[in-house]
Image (cartoon, rainbow, N blue to C red):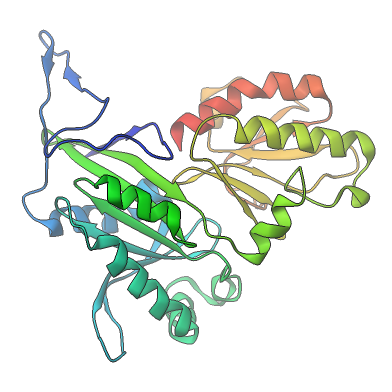
Length: 314
C-alpha cells in the first residue's frame, strides 16, 4: 500500500466526514476517474497498518502496541514509539472524529513522563542501551491519527504546552492511504527556549567563525521559511527541521563548512564532489542519506532546490 502525503499545515481546514480537504486523487489508467476517499472499516485497520510501517509513515520507531499503564485510572496506550530525534512518542488512533482523542493522549503522555524508568526499559529492550541513554525527555510527542478533527481540536493544540500533531488519514481504493497534518505544535521545553534565543538555532555565535555564523543563520531562515508547521528540534549533535518527520538536519559548523543532511534519495540527484555526497550506510549525526556541504552563500542558493525536495517528502 502506498502512502500519499498532503502538505503539512499549522491549521488545515477541517473536512466533512469521508472527504479530504484540498486533495483529490485520480486514476489515469484508461481514462480519468476520481478515486473516492473512505474511512477505515474499523480503527484497528489504521493502527495495524501504521504500527507495521511506523518509521516510514510517521518517522517513529515502533516500541509497543496496546501498552497497559499501571496507574489508578488504568488504560492502554494505542502505540508507543521513539521518533527520529529520540523523543518519546504516544500515538492514538480514531476511526472517525472523536472529541476526546487529545485529552486521552495527554493523559497517557503524563503517565509516560511520570514513569520514565518503565519507558527507558522498554526502549532498552526493543532498541538497545544506546537508544535508551539518548531519550529526549524535554520534548515528548503526541500524534493523534484520526478520520478528522474539529476546530476545537485545532484550538486545543494551540493552547497546550505539549508537542502535538493531529494527522488526518483517508484510504483511496485498496492500494493507497493519505496522511495530512491538520495541526502541529511543539511544547515549550528548556531546550526550545535556549534555541529561540539563538538566531541560527545551532551554536552560540561566540563559538563560530563570523562567516559560518552568518551562513548558519541564513540556512536556519531558509529551512524555517519553506512552509507552515516547520519545527526546529535541538539536539547536542545537530538541529533537526521537522514537519511530521525530519526533512533536514544541520550539524554545528566545522572549520570551513556547514553540513546539512536531507531526506533525498542520492540516486535521484546529480552528485557534485565537494558539494553533495551519498552517505547511505555511512554513520553521521542526524537523519538523511544526502549530505550537502555549505561553505558560502552561493552554496546555499544552489542547495535550496534540494531543501525543497526534502521538505516535500517529509
